[in-house]
Image 1: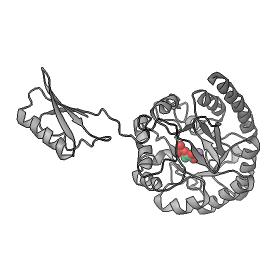
Image 2 (image 1 turned 135 degrees about the horizontal axis):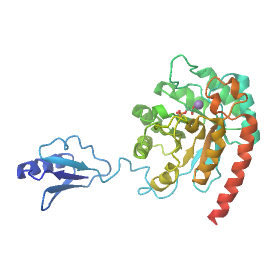
Image 3 (image 1 turned 90 degrees about the vertical axis):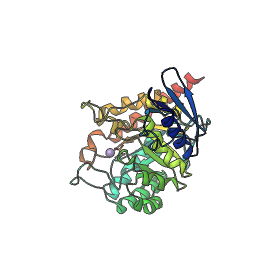
Image 4 (image 1 turned 180 degrees about the horizontal axis):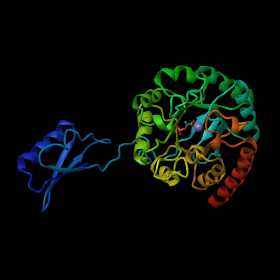
Length: 339
Ligand code: PEP
Ligand code: MN
């Protein structure tokens, strides 16, 4: 961190800033310049909360050189992390992982049918929401615990691990009993209490990018989980909110290569929530793999036109099967490129 003082800052003000830095247990090194003095802050292990410093008299600007995340960064941990979910490995050097299933668990029958279709097409992890974060309170909110039971039974019946969203700390116990991976949805990416709590578990976490989160905020959210001891975190780009209305969100694919540089955690892409449109899903899924995604999360419903949630962006079983065939070919092509 670098503290830049105003050019008319007095020696007493510079001294007060130095003392405030030292009070945080850090070293302060004044760097006098021809126009103004800057104070370098040393010995910090990560991001420094500058609230005790930036308002002090004479301070012009505080520049953070170090990032608000450390444990999830490549600098700290150069080797890629592989996250295992019920025997399925996600990360560098592993096969591309497909997580698929309906947006919401609706009935026992619907979930079992979807599970069979995902399995038959070659999907690796079954998804389905039981606790749904809906924009309005009058929309279907999910089946809750009954849904969790249908999901875990369907996963077991076809031999696929399952991922489902958890919205509140109080749901953690029950969701862990029925799921193999916990999803933290976009709306909860900065629910710091929830992040800390899942950080205390030895359980794989799928952390979706918040709708308006920068890459730095996304990684800082992952840092909350890892800082508590759980490094089994998979990141998921699911589109961000921009001025564009033609798609549900704007898929930020550049995040994939960037995160691969900045972090050792695996990154997957959800083209369903990113586009909101079924016909765009396969194209963006292909693009995601070419960008280097370690996996995908795709919504597929046995009968999308009857879906209680997100039918317009859900593939039907045939469309999903076709996508899986295409993805295998892209994966082979990417493997060829790598040699
Ligand atoms: C979901 O995956 O069902 C979901 C609600 O996604 P997001 O949190 O990305 O909106
Ligand atoms: Mn959905």
